[in-house]
Length: 223
Length: 294
Ligand code: SF4
Ligand code: SF4
Image (cartoon, rainbow over all chains, first blue to last red; front, side, top):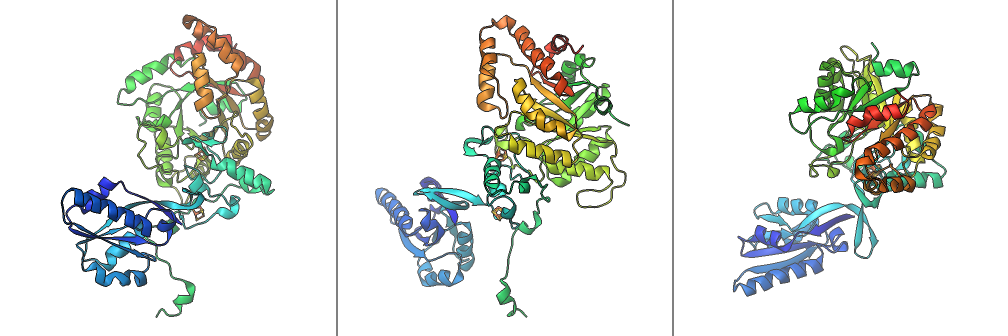
């Protein structure tokens, strides 16, 4: 899933400061799971702004609405009427969701409440960890199911750099060296020969931004 | 024409190399003055590429400045700051400037240096840079395009850390570097014969000359620091104890003794030494004498 973190309150406050009526829109998918932009977080943020407003004796209004997903037009359409009552939209979705809501309601200023961090997994309650940088050319078949482009700080595909220190990464002594992990996994699988092969050069061009793909089963509808 | 380094290594002679770090700023003159007095002792100087991710004068220009002085550079190139276009073009440019020895490294991550917010590149890695060099020497670039003039006389090398933990993945990468065309190796600093023997048992099979990396141990504190923080460097407790018992003014002498002992013992198992004096360059002649290399 996509993992995001909420920006500090004063940063968000700075962005929406000029606006009287702000609609805070949550997203019920990834960012709800990682506790940064779901219904509960929308309510919390709205409450903080309302409290601030009361303390300042102001009259600002903060609306709340959480959509199933913000990366889908079908759901974005649901708030067409609500949006008209507000001066600005504060999106608590990932960066993709923020852009999509800004595209759908391009007559309203839209602001991001989150910093989108990575594609990752849930490690334990409250902890998420990055696993994929969406390189568009997956090589996990050759690396024992551990991604060196993501898990190695340098994205090296041919084995460890000289910075491996007692199995940890030179960039952070708390982090395992990806290539120590890959080595141990391939050894366990009896597939160390994969590590001995010189890998083809990284193919960066499939990831040339921005990317659009179309599912094969839909291509028959295309003229 | 072969470089002196290549000639001697291929003639199975024992070679000694050192370092010439480019300055942070334009004061190249001072940097050259520091290394020039060693020219009768060192066959070539490694010229580092934004070493430790600290921004400096380029390895290419500093290497050329050494050539102007009649000194032989080992031009280091890393993957941290350039993609494959820039790396290949830098290697060609270096060749045009008369630079032949090329040492291919991955490079430290930018977060360790003085511009931690910079974009780390790592489009290639040390193995693929060696492949690039081999391709260029054969008159093609990495995209398979023909060159107008091939840098046929490049003498390309690589590095390896005999003290890496775990060692096996490092040895696998060593083999890949050999396969990708590395013609010589310099190692990370080694402080024990046992560590070298473990590594050399594997490395000697490759039949590629390997030069022992020697770091001058300046103090017990430095030893402890390196054990904690420098990847692949393991200073035995006995050496740290030995340095700890020495008065400050006697430290260079004991440091030289330690390094010389290692060199004497490892000499039959390597084809040279690469000395990382870390500011103690003036002691290199004494070290070489003590190590019976003069
Ligand atoms: S190689 Fe790594 S970054 Fe690329 S798609 Fe696979 S997991 Fe993601
Ligand atoms: S120490 Fe390991 S994970 Fe870190 S950059 Fe080097 S190879 Fe990658």
